[in-house]
Amino acid sequence: MFKRHKSLASERRRELISPGATRSILKDDMRNFHFLSQFILSAGPLKSTSAVKHSKTTHFEIEILDAQTKKQICIVDKVTQKSTIHDVKQKFHKACPQWYPSRVGLQLERGGPFLKDNVTIQSVAASSIVTLYFTDLGQQVSWTTVFLAEYTGPLLIYLLFYLRIPYIYDMKESSRRLCHPVVHLACFCHCIHYIRYLLETLFVHKVSAGHTSLKNLIKSCAFYWGFTSWIAYYINHPRYTPPSFGYRQVAVSAINFLICEAGNHFINVVLAHPSHTGNNACFPSPNYNPFTWMFFLVSCPNYTYEIGSWISFTIMTQTLPVGIFTLLMSIQMSLWAQKKHKIYLKKFNSYMHRKSAMIPFIL
Image 1 (cartoon, rainbow, N blue to C red):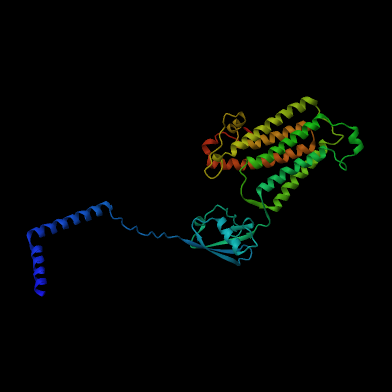
Image 2 (cartoon, rainbow, N blue to C red):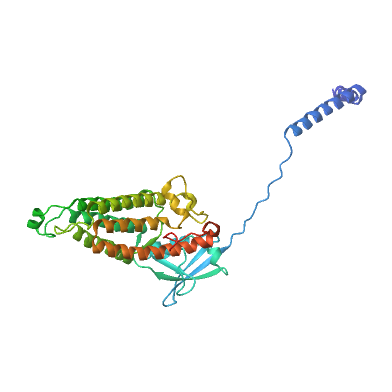
């Protein structure tokens, strides 16, 4: 048995060593090698492992001190380069919940200007530790609220005097004397003026997202509401006398009033265009609308039309309170116009050639 197994093993060894067997083995190896190379090539080039990028992010520490006592209130840490003053106010509010962001005023120096919300920390930082001084701005209200309160009050107050409600005028005298047509026309023009203001505040103007103090709201409302009460009392009084030159004076001034109101509206629409707002704004240019051609002469035609409306209303009603209000508004708007004109001169010097601020060729 042992011999038989031994003879079989020797026969197989001979077969393997024989030339035919050697050729078949080589053929199988070449076939396997060919299949392996085709598999590797079909897999595509080897992808190199991407190196992990480590981005360096600089963080700042914001030390907030009281502007009056110089005592430290808190430290806001982990503030990135791209963070803004608004972001710092949000974090400050989390640390000190009693001061909400719109109430917080931050300064680089005591007594210096308050930093705007869109200012980045990187632009004001001299080192990794930034010291800011905190001032409590008091109770704040949004600008939209301010404008709506300013314009809603005069609209309603004037209507109360126009309707001659009791306890304002003598009822017997009011019933005996009929209103002159100019009284009705004045009420219509006054309502048109403030309704336009309200609609533009809601749908046209790009009202700033900022806030102002409650004191400013009270001052503005006292000015507008007080003057409206004085104006409305005189125009709607039973003993009110019509203008000296009669219907011709009323008609011409009323037409001019409506023209100025339309011009003011179209100018505000142009100013609200995205290309005329923001940091990359361009100077407003006139278009096919004739009311916008005032841009050829002045840089702030909205104030020009506004003063034109009040001068027309003064001539139409011929009352002293309206004249005083028009004079005060003219002074205030001329200051605003000169301030804007200086800004335009710095930014758009080539467009401001021979232009006035508010009144063509004069101011």
